[in-house]
Image (cartoon, rainbow, N blue to C red; front, side, top):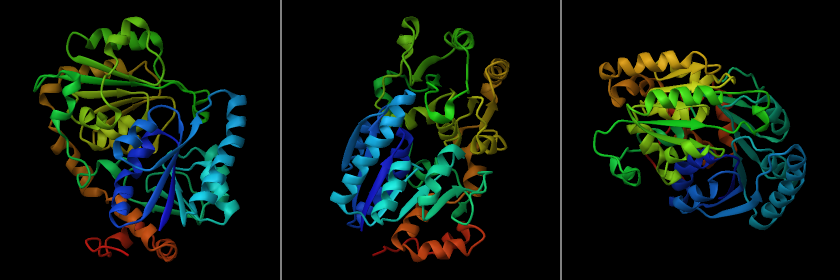
Length: 364
């Protein structure tokens, strides 16, 4: 089987990595396509995947229009050359449209619920796999499963935390640190939304800097006086840092959810309401705030009570007991394509199918 996986965000490399590794073990040919937005290329290189860059990502309105034309053309050319049997992505328009144009089936994964994007790619998708908690009803193509996207790659079957991987940070064993993630709000779904103000960032950093080592991951450039906090860690190792952090403060939902499924308490600050981070609040793993006004008091109280907090394994255990392993679902779906889609659509929940599968046996 030949598969193109189109990457729209660094997190999507993580999302598909265990699936791709399992497929390559079985002798299938995969090609990752991507735009150079942040550190997609570094992640793909670290994983050793075959990849093809479509060039830089565009942020301006005019650039996005030009990018739609350019990236669709490059995707079309890639499909004609690689001759895939299937295209996969986290809801990217280029794979969806060009797959349809060339008669190649396209399978989407979706968890953000950004309808302005979904409405564009949905007509071209054969099916859309979504977490059960996604509130949007996407029609007969939607197949729900009981998990979060972050469990595709952070499920214990695929990720083992290793403190030794944090050597570039110069941490001592047991040294407490906090990770802050700031986003640029340049994506189309970010228009009109916000997280912290500059003053609120400064307030939190001033409060934490004498209590913890601070590491900042930022999509945009940091002001000179904060650059000393810029995290110096290869991006493919960031999840080890999220696991061992005392807690995480993030304007990005993905990082907040990643911390949560690893058992690290996260504070998500963004005016965009996200279903999966809100669902993790019932496990006490992610606290959600629409802006930065109230989070400071919550962080202060958390710091004061930190010594009484459970460890990561204890905190995430209830979540893992409730969730399925979504990579196994994706493997079964792809390797039994297209009959798998009909079987899944006949079920009320995808997990009912997964629980009946011989997942410990190799597929052809």
